[in-house]
Length: 358
Image (cartoon, rainbow, N blue to C red):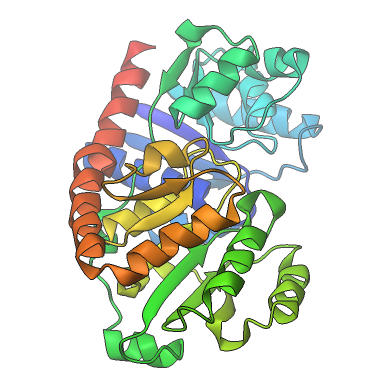
């Protein structure tokens, strides 16, 4: 089978990484893949390093009709069995139109859980045979937008089991992030934007630091709230309790060195960062919202609390800081759950089944 993938994102974040996981797994099963992406984008670099066949086609956004023409011409040359559009910016609406013009069956992945106008949703998804939701929460949003249930398929994102194998020893890890021996190391990873809820975490840390000084929080990620969140941390006098570490493309190499992962997102398609934490044996604390509720098995691999509740978030974090045995139980359960339900092999087989059904 020949699958052409379209990913027009500029940065190599969670979505593009899923595309690489899928293409590599499909290649291992003997299927041909072509990736259409922006020149000099994050996924362009990673795909070429992995030996994936890449075709660069520039896309200026959702109104770039020249992208439709260029992509449709390339599709007519290649004649893939299926076109799989992976991203929102340009790839979904325009990618679907290009596939329609080339008379090739197309599917699209939906990774976000925000709502949109019914008319816009109808237009966006009309060209596609199937719309793939990466969580039950996203499937519900699609149904609310009047997308027919029979056109929706749920295939959850996957996590690489190699995340469990930390490439950084504990001593080097603690030295790099200035975490003393015996201190609880807490990781937070996500864009510094409002819906990721960092402000609630900082408030919880402020309430904890005097009573429980034996921890350090390291926040990974960039975003337009960077300065505002740093100012909030300063105003709360968090000092060395919180460190902003910026975006790290090697986080997978040492995520397993942390004792706890906190994900205070207020909305989440699924939360690949939480999947990676669990795969690495790190218990998760987060708000009980959207896809996070599916990524974390509450009470077994982590603790989920009422959204926006600083007191509950604080209590959940403190409960795991104080209970090493509970952390160990959540750690083992998380690794088993990721292997059994969120493996790349399972995801790839479900996509193959979907492609063949078309």
